[in-house]
Image (tube, rainbow, N blue to C red; front, side, top):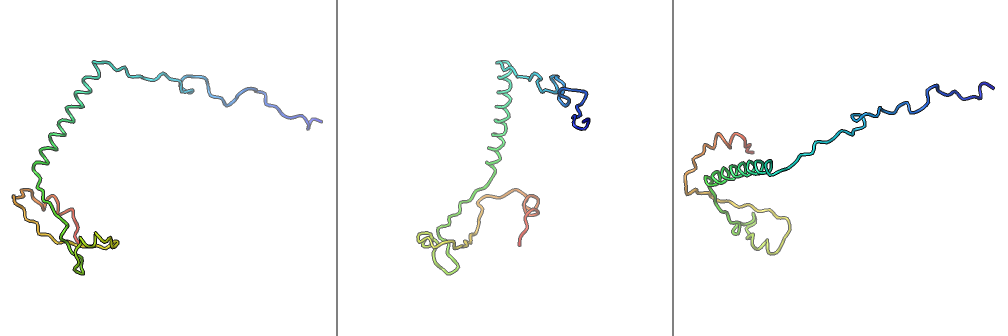
Amino acid sequence: MPDDIPKLPRQRGKKNQPKDTAWKQQKLPALRPHYSITSAIPVTLITGLATLAMGIALFFGHQGSLEQEVLYTNCTLPNGTQVERVLRCEMGNETFQCAFNIILDQDYTVNLESCCFRKLQYY
């Protein structure tokens, strides 16, 4: 008969429940920023000045670049047909190569060896 009686623990209740503190229950008060005119105007001005400075730097950097327009209308396929005819007929995924001579009208003042050719690998 003593074997039929279940063994009950002496301590009853919720043993594994965490303590009811604000830290453990994640009920801490949140920091909510208070926006006012005195805090919004400086942030807006600083952001605007930073954006203006980046825009001016990009504008003057672009002014120093050289540009040449290349038209691909007179290219030919390796078999001698004009690319315009192939594009009109939509003959699929044929590849074509164009050869252009680039002639700069202005002097290019940047040292190309230091900025470009060391990083590129030609095969």
